[in-house]
Image (cartoon, rainbow, N blue to C red; front, top):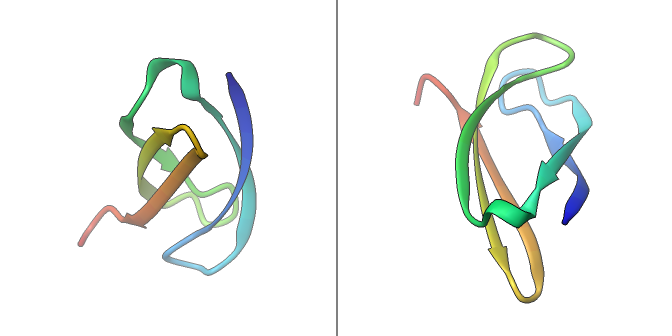
Length: 60
């Protein structure tokens, strides 16, 4: 299942859309901000209610 989510960059504060593949279950990965190009740590949790994407700075 592919979902489109809106996230906010923890560095520059800009919101942008990202696409996640929920078929693989819970995941952790790095995605670069499309505005400032800094690395964002993403943690995807997939439940029966739908996906949740938690983002944080890579340098925390």
